[in-house]
Length: 195
Image (spheres, rainbow, N blue to C red):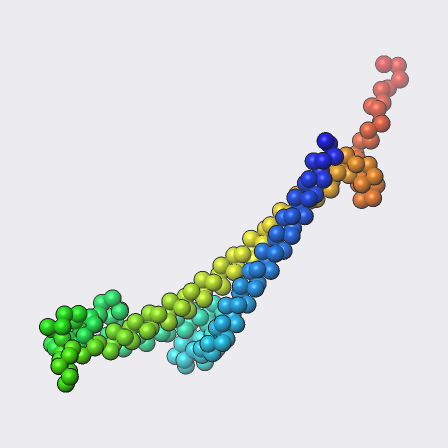
């Protein structure tokens, strides 16, 4: 039984080590997938972005693009968001528009005129959400890589403890690993002569 526990610790350490390596691999793989998708979209930040004229491939450039999209959309809509705007242009010229067809501007076809600025706000919101989703994916992938490193360290610690205990419990393993007990089992305490 005293041999089984160190062996079990060594096995658990190996399992943690393998799981940690796999977790790190998956984190890097996820980051690469997000980056490849952004590259495929071929998004380039405009000249007035905080990171100008750069292809969006990472957290910083995705955040820069999302921020400039919001700035451009707000300037186009007079600072109004999609939720603050009506479906139709208002007959009284209110830039927020209206969702009431009776208050809407009527077009030549006799139908309420759609609020084009609301569509701009909607598209900007959708693009920002996509970019912030890619930012979140990058951050989660980085977190997964960090957790994988922690699992590797845990595996090394548990496995190392198993090796140390195993070297004490299994003398042949101790000799192979050059682990010597501090006090040998057959040594008896020395008693001074004459006591």
